[in-house]
Each structure stands twice: as C-alpha cells, then as structure tokens.
Length: 413
Image 1 (cartoon, rainbow, N blue to C red):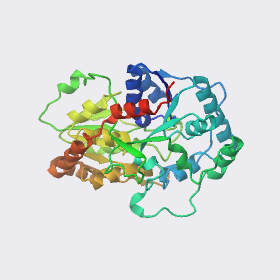
Image 2: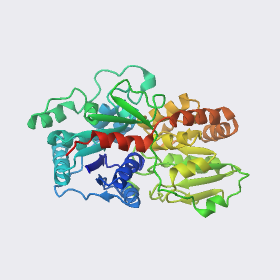
Image 3: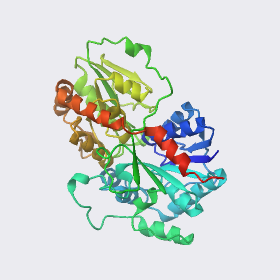
Image 4: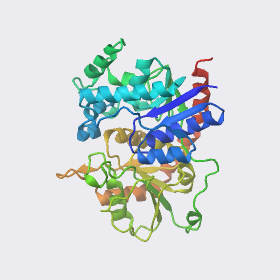
C-alpha cells in the first residue's frame, strides 16, 4: 500500500477539495494511507464529512502574504494571478518552508496537488513525486484565463524571479513561468478536450470529478416541492472572502443579490445553497419562493434542478454539465469567466458579466439576468447542448480513472 498526501491552495472555497476528495476517498477505501491538507473552514468541513484525515497547520508559522486582489480578479493567467496574490518574498519563503515541513513530516510516497503553489514548490524541494489534478486553464500548456482575447501579452507580472531564488537555494533548476510548478510528473485534467483544451500530449483528461457521499439523498423538503414549477439551483461560492470585515474584488455576493432582485416573483422554486459559507448580514430576508440550504450533494441536486445559477467556478461547471443541465453564470473573476465562456461556447448556458462600481462592489443588470434565466429555461437548445456534453463526458472515468492512474504512478516498495 502507498501513502498519499492531497494538497491544494487553502482557499475557503469548495472547488479544489471537491475535485480532490473523491479521489482521496477512493484511494483510502482501497487500503492506502491518505491525508489531505486544507485548513480553511468550508473545505475542512467537506474533508471531515468524507471521513478523511485533514492534517493540522504546520508548527512553523505561515505569515500572511500581502497581495493585490483586484489584480487577482482580472489576471490573464496563473502567472499573473500568483504575482498579484503573493507580493512579499520573505513571506513566500517562510510559507514554502512550512509546506516543506508538512510534506517531510507526513512522508508521502506521492503528493497529489491541485493549484497549490507552495505545496508544489515543497514537493520539488524534497524530491517527492507529484501528480497534479488540474482544470485546463491551470496547466502550462493552456491558453490561460482570457483565451478569447488572443495571444498572451508580453510583460505581465511574474513571481518567477522570487521563486527561482528559492529554487536555487535548494539546487533546483529555474522555471520560466510559475505555472510550470503546478504540473507534476503525472498531469490529470478534470474535464474533456472540449471543456478544458490543453495542448500537451502528457496531460490526461479524466472527465468530470464531482463529490457526494455514497447514496447521498436530497432533503425530504426538496421532494415535496411542486414539480409543476421549475426548480432553479443557485450556488454562489464564497460571498465574502474577508468575512464581514470588508469586501474584495473576488467576492460572489453579487450572485445572491442579483438572484433575489430578479427572481423574487419568478414562478419557480429557487434553492440557494451556501456551501458551508456564512450568509453576509447585508443579505435581506429571502423571498417566499427561495429556500436556503447549508450544503447539498452537488450531483444529486444538479440532476433534480432545471437550471443552475452559479459564479462560473470550474467544479460548478463540471457538476452541471455532468448532469446535462444548462446554466446562467455570473463570473466574478477572470478564471471563472474563462470557465463560463467555455460552457457558453458549447451552447449550454449564458454569461452575465458583473460591472464594478466606484466603491469596488459589483453589480448586475437585473433585467438582463432575468431575461437570460427565462431564455435558458425556455429554449430547448441549451438543454440539448448540455445533454450532448454530458454524453461525451461519460466516456471518461472521472475519480475512479484518476485513482487508478495515481496508484500506478506511485513508486513500488
């Protein structure tokens, strides 16, 4: 049996753990030693619900790293995103050292990572084999987030000089772009060539990876809803990344606010699931046709819904497409706009772009949002396109295929 450590960027979102937890759970069920590392509150809850070990924070302190969240929200690709997100060299060095401690102490045979800059760096420093589980836009051979705008501009900010100094301290060759660090010796791409195009023969598409407990059932109150009315499922992502303290350019509260304004008198059931996030105090009382849930099993809920409304997160896109359901998306950062535009290009949904106000908050044309919800619900072409993509996705093995490949990749005793 092998020993696997699953790592990722510790964002307080469910997207990254939702793609890793199914694979980790399968490997644990096969008798391997498996641990996960993500101390953020919402991911920690998902990891615990799956019955997996979530490693504690390393003893070595990880200082906060100042960053430009507006730059993160508008980033062209992974390189620009990390350059905006992490802007203090000493803090980057200390955080990398903490991840070195984490991996060294657990001593895995393989690190399985998704978008974890510091865990990927640490795996290289220690020479531990790494398998990556990435969406297409996170891979070095992708066209980045703003793929519809043409070639990548020259002169974008990069962390490469900082990271290369750290790599040199450990006798490791430099990288030309930070995104190279996210690729492992085994690269698994969540999605298919049409949802996540990657120009690399070494990248293996595994189809959608979605998580719910075995035999997860929807709450009884959902079954009791009037089936004659359409059911709209809203998953907004993290509404406030800084909590109640402040707003950030990455917040998805605009999805909730717009849905309440546009759908309060819509002749439908609207289910809002928070994904273990706290609802901000400024959210008003929900309209009578709305129902709030702390967490719902994604695949089961997507199959039950007539339409998904979300922030363009990759895991939300995969969950909806795997169930053959169309979506209306309000992408709040460039990475989510990348996913949303891919889905819309497949004919399986519509995109409503938010506008940034002078105070930094985002807003939506409510009438445009409402009309697109009505259009996607009423025009069968969107549903037909989503079902076609779902049929294509069934050719891939998802989490089981990933677990097989990672098992084969692990060094033999």
